[in-house]
Length: 110
Image 1 (cartoon, rainbow, N blue to C red):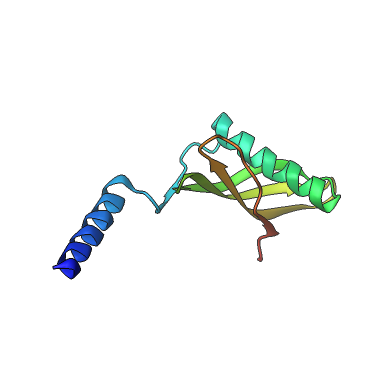
Image 2 (spheres, rainbow, N blue to C red):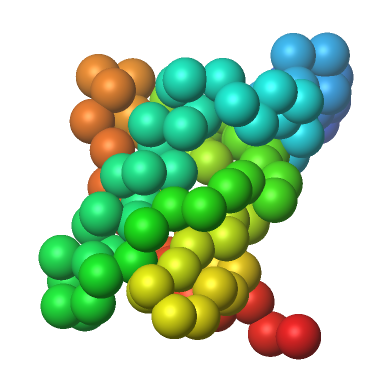
């Protein structure tokens, strides 16, 4: 009986995730959305602070988000150091209280 109850609970949970989209990555259509631009600028600024370089955001290449206790943003951005422009892959969790932190920022391999 306990096994059936557990299985039923898991199936209901899986159905809820598929209906609400929780946990799945969703593309962001408007890369010029001010909120998304703010997150991209935070990623570049925080990377600059940590690595002691001076990158400037040039453009957004793509972006997707995942809903998990807030949102996690996966960004592919183009940034320049003044002489060279490169693409970077950044991950920025945006918690329910809207506090954000850069958890990954690395060059995109060609």
